[in-house]
Length: 66
Image (cartoon, rainbow, N blue to C red; front, side, top):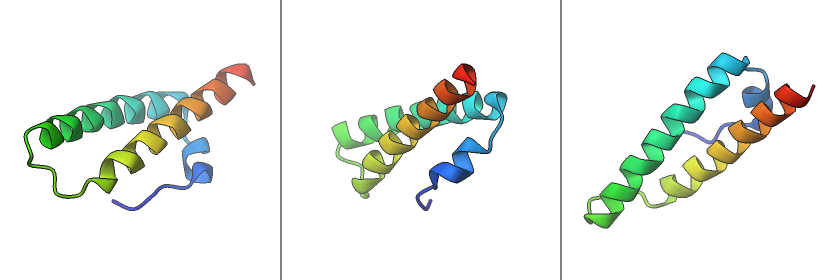
């Protein structure tokens, strides 16, 4: 899954952002569990997911303050 640009994220509606945030947090949990059990092959994916979570949360904050 390629990195997502913030411009693409900021174009989503608040409902889509909430859904995406929930999915990303679930993926982050799964990646943490895989790493703990030694099954995670692509460790850089955790970093990408963390950044996407931050971008989505920023977009939600901007959407609510506007």
